[in-house]
Image 1 (cartoon, rainbow, N blue to C red):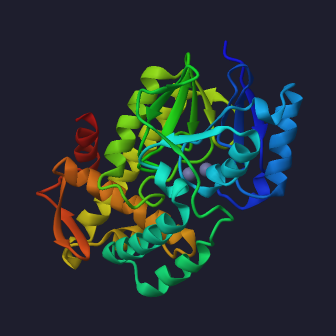
Image 2: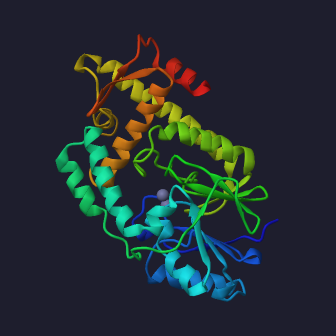
Length: 326
Ligand SMILES: [Zn+2]
Ligand SMILES: [Zn+2]
């Protein structure tokens, strides 16, 4: 049994819809996973957690981060620096921390462009860019880039995209540190959290299968451990059901002509504000792209992106079930 210590590094009231962040210390390997958000409170909890395990901060030799979101990377540069540890991430996400300042600007530009392409009106995207405040991270920091299958002190890197393009789970025996790929009480956002992915839901389905094959006990980026396979079954069912609703919108609104992801999102979720704009439109896009990949819907326009049903759909449920079997 791996020696795993969970350190709750932020509280549920920190504003994230996912709840408080969990860091994990593998004391006998000198590995710390997902140090958590920036700020003094996290830092104090992290330091106390390491000391409670009978270690000095300098006993931490490797800081591993599952993905680029600030609630996971925020404390990582300071920890790596004070512990004189290496900081490592999957190579697809590493530049978003390693080259933070420049990569953030590129990301904001890409997000604005992508949201416009998804049909989101400008007055909804402008506040989003303001909401996306700059995290107190160094402009650049050395990050070791990890590839799928590589190991660090016996901990294996399992590329698990969908939530972000370079999300990685870290697996030791049959225990998985799964970041935001699988969470217990919320459905991880797929589509809105990283606009670099062309078919995020297909990537995410593959991720769920890969994790199922490798992991029994999941240690998530938010909250405590749970049985992985029971939860991945629920997430698949959730996405199948959501896929049916997306297809139902295209079928029932057919006379409006081809629809953008934003049209579909507003039909599904109603009025959206703040980050819900990005998450809602991203989720609709993820489902439309997934149905397109399975020939259930077709792409009609490219900018803005519009979709229509690919042929006669007599029963959305059956069509989506078939797509999920492929
Ligand atoms: Zn995340
Ligand atoms: Zn998170």
